[in-house]
Image (cartoon, rainbow, N blue to C red):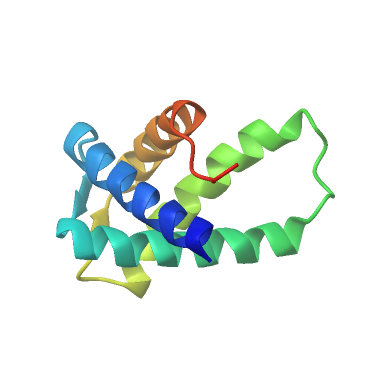
Length: 109
């Protein structure tokens, strides 16, 4: 349980950081980022359930990038007051989040 809480807090902080860097992405404060992080996690989980292990190892990177961009873009319609993003902003945010996620641990080991 503590690991999930830490993961959502780190994800919200990364989302706030990315919103300052990426044009076309606007997050409404830490609470909005936390709500958006939960929605993005739930949508990502549903996409992961749908695809499962059907994706080849080489295709996971590109599929993950596109899926993250789509999930970020769709999250604005689920929580309209918390996040606002354009298509280009979602693609750039997906790229920056992928880079930041490779350096920032989001799970407790």
